[in-house]
Length: 91
Image (tube, rainbow, N blue to C red; front, top):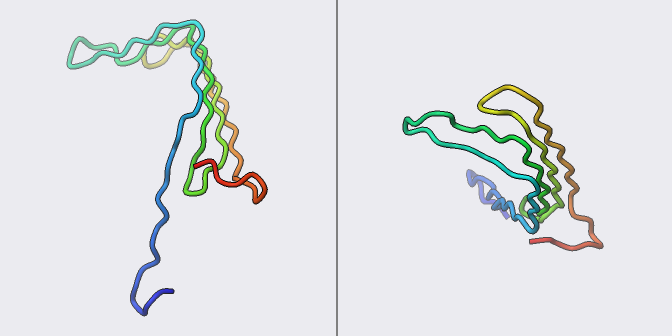
């Protein structure tokens, strides 16, 4: 119930990681000025979790190569599905 002049409350938003699998490796970051700021190489990872105030499903497979802030292929696939009434909330 909203009173006149009252703004609707925003639902809190959550991103919850429930599974992370990393195969291969390499990730380089740095800066504060020993420079680079990202590198990657043959990184391959899959992440799953839930998102939003009611917990929809989220899947993120990532592959890499890159080598600094731009060079070769990087793929990020995302799959998201809102919760269904029968599945209940993931959060």
